[in-house]
Amino acid sequence: MENKLGILEKGRGGMTLLVVLAHINLLVDCNLFHGLFIQGWCGVDFFFVLSGFLMIWTYNERTSPIAYVKKRFIRIYPVYWVYTLVTLIMNLFIVLIFDSSLISWINLDLSGLIRSFLCLPTNVAINEMPIIPPAWTLSYEIFFYIISLFLYIYGRRIFRGILIVWGGLIITRTGFIISNPYIDFILDPLFLEFLGGMLIAQIIKYKKSKKIENVISLGVGIVWLVVFWSMENMEIDILTHFNRVFKFGVAFAFIVYGAVGLEISGMFKNRKNFGSSILEFLERISFSLYLVHYPLVAMLSIMCRKLHISAIVAFVAISSICILAGGISHYLIEKNIIYVCNKKFIENVKSY
Image (tube, rainbow, N blue to C red):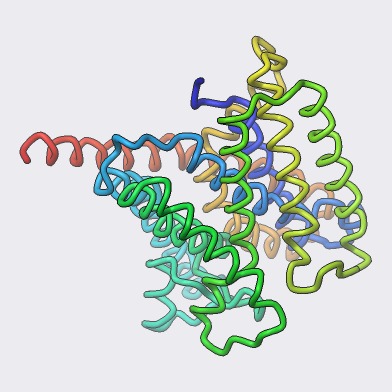
């Protein structure tokens, strides 16, 4: 069974673009397209389900814990640090030239800098976010990687017990007010999306599903997503604390289960077209696009308003600029940083 699943890679590219469009719709004009794209922030829920799925799907018991940690560290931190520094430089430039600040979502004191650079949790509920705002999700990814390290240290059986305890604590915390922000973070219901993704991978690996079952799952997931996407503007809460997980985490769990099952059955093989190529490109640049777009959107939306550029023109122009910036950043910065870090890592292993 191959680990590589093209349908999920394309999905990551599409969902990254959706998050970008959500921020553009929100910052340029929230009434544009009747706010259609603003709910695109739910792409983050897809990322969380996907991360859980891939953790089990790509697991190799021969991988050492040290190799696992280094691989995850190299994939996230060096690139993220460079983009964070660039954002700080952009902010300094705007302060000096326009006597205004680009970064208004976190205090740029020592505490704010440390939390941003280490991807420590911030309070998104009060609009406190890292220097690169979308990076609030990285704190969830990194903590999930820390928990997953136990899989490489102790193996499947003990790790399964850890997940059961963790999931149980998350579910039973409902109704309790937790004053410690870090405990509150560890027991955030969003982690159930990671756990759901892992469960899906486990089921698919050891159970051969029927094509009709996969089609139904995919269909249910899409309908579920469309319904709750449409209801989001109505601000209808379903399960209060688990609201987001129920609305979008469940939808993407159904979609991932159905889509992966259909790909394994051969339904998506050899289906190359222009749309597929676009999604593959977006997947390649997804990490860079995800990190560089928000400061650009914030700055360009202000400029467009000052220049009295219409909202629709601004939306199209800023979308294009973000994709271009994400592509350039990926090929000139991200790829080179990862290449150098991996090269150093291989050299260190050989010398050891």
